[in-house]
Image (cartoon, rainbow, N blue to C red):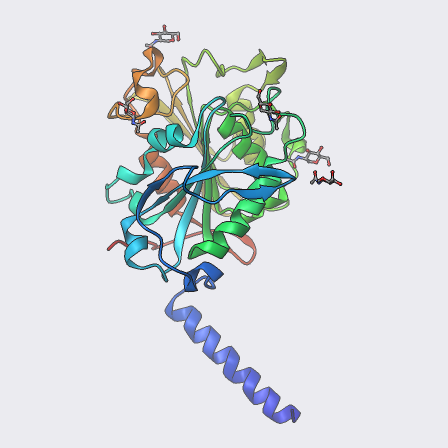
Amino acid sequence: MPSQLKAILTTLLLLTTSSLASLSPHLSPPTPGCSGTPHPPGFHDTTTTPPIHSGNLTRTYAIYIPPSYAANPHHPHPLILDYHGNNGNPLNQYNNSRYFDIDTPLGQGQSYIAVYPAGMNGSWQSAPYAVEGVDDVRFTGDLLDHLRREYCIDTTRIYASGKSNGGGFVDYLACSDVGDQFAAFAMSSAALYSDKGVAQCNNSKPRAILESHGGNDSTISYLGGPRSGGFLPDVREWIGWWAVRDGCAADCEDCKEVEGENGYEVLRYDCGGLEDVVVHYEVFELGHCWPSSTGENSDSARSYCGDRSLDFTSVVLEFFGRWRLGSGGVEMAEGWRGWRT
Ligand SMILES: *[C@@H]1O[C@H](CO)[C@@H](O)[C@H](O)[C@H]1NC(C)=O
Ligand SMILES: *[C@@H]1O[C@H](CO)[C@@H](O)[C@H](O)[C@H]1NC(C)=O
Ligand SMILES: *[C@@H]1O[C@H](CO)[C@@H](O)[C@H](O)[C@H]1NC(C)=O
Ligand SMILES: *[C@@H]1O[C@H](CO)[C@@H](O)[C@H](O)[C@H]1NC(C)=O
Ligand SMILES: *[C@@H]1O[C@H](CO)[C@@H](O)[C@H](O)[C@H]1NC(C)=O
């Protein structure tokens, strides 16, 4: 091709892509699944989704397809991967985070595809009791490949959440390269066995991190200590490690503490130009639970889950709504209001 023509075409192409970008700043390239067949709405358990092969193992997952996806199967949707606790299962976690029934102005739970991976024999990599040799970080990467092929996903808005062992795995994932594919991470009562200090983490880019922890957690103690043949960090010390990893000073110079007249305290850090990029909730009277204000989730029935002061799912969805992936890593998604049918 003559170089002049090539230059004109290149200019045209640049003009087209830049005007597209300004029209729709959060446009993500369609995943192969965007041209595929529609998927029926609702919860589909591990017996109805196709298993995938990862690290020589057969791995399974459940999925929730929101009505908005079924109505617009070619519109890229944000995605949450939600990991259950030790000896838990996808249905239990689906009913714990309950992303599906949140309908608050900030909620937007109905706009997400939510996927519930099943742990090998009920547990996740990073805990002392995890099945030895199982690579769940690799499984997560393989699962994302599979989901992008089969579903129409907004790859700038992929998130991870989890409870207990699932939360500890989300922390481990945030510390890995596969974590680069996620815009934000949320955990409740995280069992942080694998996290031992600032330098233990292999992330090369900043991470948006949210965690809630019960002050009355007698399973994964707020103050840390030995358990299950491993050792857990003090939760406040650990959240400070994330602030430092994201470019904050170690001494909480940049942190904001909001006193808990509502039954909980919030700790927030602005780091490296990212506002409230590390956020922690301490729920004073809560035990080892995914915090629910309505008492409708899987954990609610437990004797130590009676503290109803925080609705964590709303907090998680608000947090996720604030973050997306740009070319350089996590960015604030200002002005994003979500969309509904
Ligand atoms: C899968 O199994 C083959 C044959 O036993 C082995 O060579 C390979 O290293 C295994 N791969 C993984 C990821 O475990
Ligand atoms: C899971 O548990 C079953 C039954 O205890 C055992 O046979 C199987 O080997 C375990 N799976 C792995 C990957 O260790
Ligand atoms: C980080 O790297 C170390 C050393 O290669 C490895 O042992 C550890 O498992 C890695 N952690 C994560 C979360 O990938
Ligand atoms: C969800 O949790 C509630 C409260 O613990 C329980 O009554 C209900 O049966 C659970 N539903 C499912 C599908 O597990
Ligand atoms: C705190 O935890 C203990 C042990 O799990 C439980 O017996 C107690 O009821 C909890 N306290 C509150 C206020 O829920």
